[in-house]
Length: 223
Ligand code: SF4
Image (cartoon, rainbow, N blue to C red; front, top):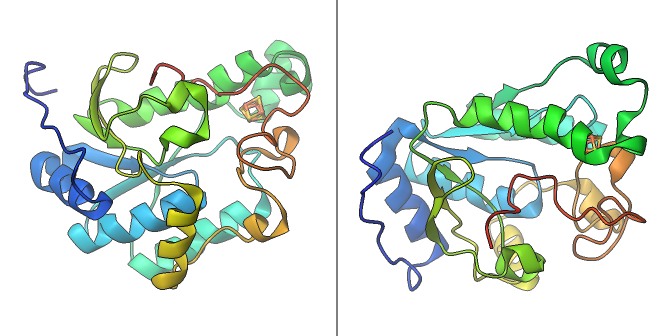
């Protein structure tokens, strides 16, 4: 970790591609894109590898992702001749042995802590910064996200190049650049996570539908 006193620039007027390029230039191999294979990451992956063909991206593999997500991961790796780093928690069998079957039905926050937050901490360890696809319009918890900010929760710089983009901005870029994107977006899934916790829906309404849960804990401190 560099000096935490690092003066973070105000890049609010910079384009998303410029923010990604700044991130790569500033942090080199110490910055990585967190990739959940939403349409936002389709754009950011393109910007990342344009800025640095050896740029780093990682995925949190909960072992509960849609088959289409794993297919897209393979497509991305082939398109950019890269390997997406994968971080995993305990196996589903290990989780079941300790907490019982289908923990996501009974304690989704604990399940996310085990399958997402734990692996995220592994993925972020050793990094100075991470790049995310969060946008301010996605949820109240994300409404105050800056393009470059200090992440108090995980203790590194957090870079949100698409913070000021709306849904149409993302789709415009995906189509303009003919980028590969998650096929479930065309089946009514605006946001895509784990199979048991994802339903079709606008915005993030299809995530943990029918519960009070709105975030898995990766970004809830962004506000
Ligand atoms: S989204 Fe659901 S299945 Fe995935 S880690 Fe969270 S609670 Fe578990």
